Length: 67
Image (cartoon, rainbow, N blue to C red; front, side, top):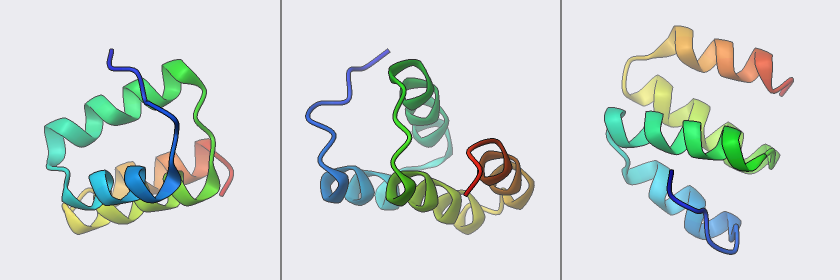
């Protein structure tokens, strides 16, 4: 697990937008462990999942996080 430093939303969104599938799944795991529940961050993750062709995973995440 990598610590998510400072939780600067803009930095996190920039990372998410450039993440590939494996990195994004690791980031999701780290967010869950550390309790990250920022709407903008979760929305950015869902958007990136969709861009990667992982629509079902995006729907599941948005449902689980109630966004």
